[in-house]
Amino acid sequence: MYLAPSPSWRRRFALLILSSLLLAAGCSKAKKSVPVSGNISVEGKPLPSGVVTFSPDESKGNTEKGAPVGTVTDGRYEVKGGVPLGWYKVTVNTMMPPPATDTMSPGGKPPAMPSANAPRINQKYLTPASTDLSVEVVENAAPDRYDLKLTR
Image 1 (cartoon, one colour):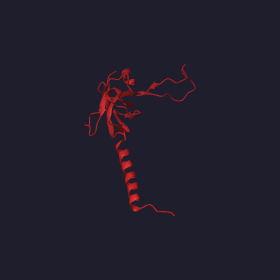
Image 2 (cartoon, rainbow, N blue to C red):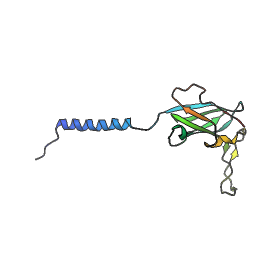
Image 3 (tube, rainbow, N blue to C red):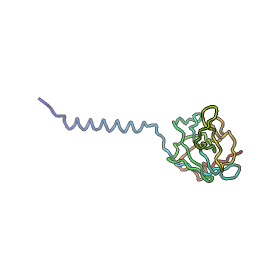
């Protein structure tokens, strides 16, 4: 003989599933992303073009995976999709990949070339280990919070 589950059993099962989902949502480690943009200059002049990368700063507790990237155009940059909250080491690169050619460097890779209109910047800005640009991405940031001032 088959006995159908009682309505109270169904309610308990639904409550168990709902509780599990709420608990899982509460334990999620995904951080909120916020818009990040700013002005970027080299010794007071707008940087015409380049790439800005936000690398999580583990020394300040940021264990995010990945490094959000923004593009620089006419002294302004924006990171599409935002950046998770936390501390970041910021790097800037004005080197652009060369056009496709058959000539390669001895290492088998074409050498990077400065963007046609990009001024020289200090090489310390190229890697997270050497950059002195550090920012904390926060909610409701002031308009100039993420402005970057570079040297040659």
